[in-house]
Length: 402
Image (tube, rainbow, N blue to C red):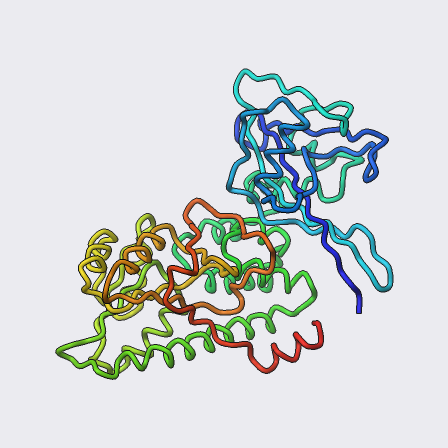
């Protein structure tokens, strides 16, 4: 078995000019020939993440140490990490995990070097960055991760992939299935797909499996199996709440945003069951809750603020949400979830349940990047996380270290 160690670093790309592939300029720094790693190579403003730091804090510190950008702050919408194999032997490998981000050069400010790591810098175009040599490994790739694929040459990204990336109504599981279909049916590049929607971890996990050599059909089967297990588990957990309910006194459940897993759960619960009243929130911006209500047979769908008031007025029994990502401390979901969960915590009636599966579990010590339509919600705000225990197959794989 190969032992793997991970060295975590930040690469912060300083940007200047208009935000198009043709006009954007990127600062690249020439590493001094005395540097212990990658001497005389081109790099972004980069450095190791120190104990107790987040990638954002490291990027801010490196900017202050290596340039005159003392007040500029990195963009908090960072890209998904990039893994680079640095050293590899028969029994050990070292991976450099690069957390990429960007910062905009303030108008009128001339960039200046500080510190001792670089001897000079220059501004170059996106195409020049892609052709830059010698550069630290995966420099251009890290830039495209930092900008979520926005500046990729459109000759390497199909229109179908762009249409998929701009889908803001489908849930994470459906987005992962559609991404796998692009790989299988249209030869889409999984390393490019994982750049676009970093907050939807089911996509990242699925593409990582493709990159690792797993067949798309096997991943699709696993994705569907996990979703089914999650739905069955949630239904079993929710059934006891129906025990004392009736048509005249139903269990009132509300949902937020759109999730194929929630659709499975609620379709099962609603099947010939008059003990449940279901309310969907429109989930602005995007209003994908309207689609959710239609998928559930045309159930009631109301404005987000109206649902919030019902929760505060103790008129809701269960707030049921899905997730785009689960970490040890937080759930990532659509903006608006947090205030709904906080309102439920002040209610004497409402319980908040998060339904999720193992494809949405994040595998890194730092949370995934947050797109602007997502937010983190503390697990403490949930009464229960409805995540099924590992299957027997998963337990065996874990014991075998695969």
